[in-house]
Image 1 (tube, rainbow over the protein chains, first blue to last red):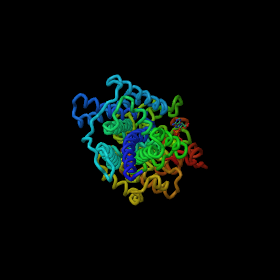
Image 2: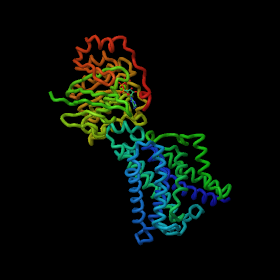
Image 3: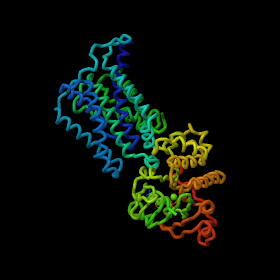
Image 4: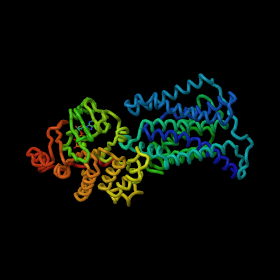
Length: 292
Length: 247
Ligand SMILES: Nc1ncnc2c1ncn2[C@@H]1O[C@H](COP(=O)(O)OP(=O)(O)OP(=O)(O)O)[C@@H](O)[C@H]1O
Ligand SMILES: [Mg+2]
């Protein structure tokens, strides 16, 4: 293997990893504020891609389609919390988690019904002429993926560290009762966490769709990988989610390079099982409240 | 005299178990009122029902002249009710400074109160960047009170501030109570150490089995034989509860 090959594998690992990181962030934000795992997270990713594809097909400019997909998916996230989960909140975490699985199936069949079962293509954001980088050829869309992930991570950091909402989210991740007695409307914070995780998932789905194509059924696979990445980084830790995503992406690339492409998807499962058994607190092992 | 807090016939509980039964009490501005009672009497539940953490089953809670029964705590903070909960419920992973900022969450401009709080508890000023969970027990209790003060309360509900603290620290904390009285805050103080509580309080209520069974001025209660027997004699100190170890 030449060094250009290695670079190629690293680049594709980082590209996949960045997407996993965004999806993992979605899992982590909801988990931190509610203690539940939102299994509709993968569908937010699917919605992102499919809505952009639908927008572009309908003649809406690409940029507007992407923004629209993110906004709509974010609203879907809020709606799931407000209209579906909140009324039955007292049923307990397990029931809520099962309900998110139901939401996930609903979203998937609804999109299939609306847009059909076929794969959809999305044009690249800025052309498809590969750029040469240290001897390897990189598609510009890969740079978009990495750039948007960095921007999203930076945005989240600012939100958490320097805004009132961020402080409220950190408080909720520690104790809802404590948050309420200082005046935080915890129900609203929980809803916004779902909205934010919807936005992150959709952003991931939209920015990677030009590379991978998209379809109504891409959510489940991405949900598994994002979840594995979130668990790897320690559920509830945003920094961990990003690290977990990138590590998982690189591990997959490594597996493809060393063993074969056949096993790529198994890596996430193996990682998930190993982490849950050996180190359930994740590789970093912190919690949302503690960092930043 | 106009009352800051009026509780009338309040009942509350968990599941089907009634824990607070038709409790009525009142606290005036600038008054410190002690709520005494043994373990499990329902004191903490009463405070939670007042501030909305536990939904009341019957009765009313009024702040000033406004009926606020059943309003959620995030609403009541804005009406001037602050709870210093049993076990403190600090944001342990956040800094002292963040905890204070969260205390003022309901307000836009917390700088002035913050100075007042730091002057009441100077030790906090030197710990601003430290995580709340790394503070000593006494400092944590000061932070819990400071956080509550940050919301500029008119009514302060204090649940066992002396629990598990050394006598010297307890004395410091109770000195601050006297300052709160001077600020005109109405304080409802739950305390196991009846002697201590009645020393600082103007009046007191005794709770048993969820009901108020006795009330009177602090002086009368201190000299009352029943109270002395039950709460002022060889009173056993309560063990640190699990709730204390959290946060
Ligand atoms: N969250 C809860 N769920 C169910 N029962 C509870 C809960 N909290 C308290 N109880 C019960 O309600 C009763 C009164 O509890 P509460 O904490 O109000 O008493 P307390 O007077 O504050 O006692 P202590 O002095 O031990 O703090 C107890 O029997 C307790 O077991
Ligand atoms: Mg109690």
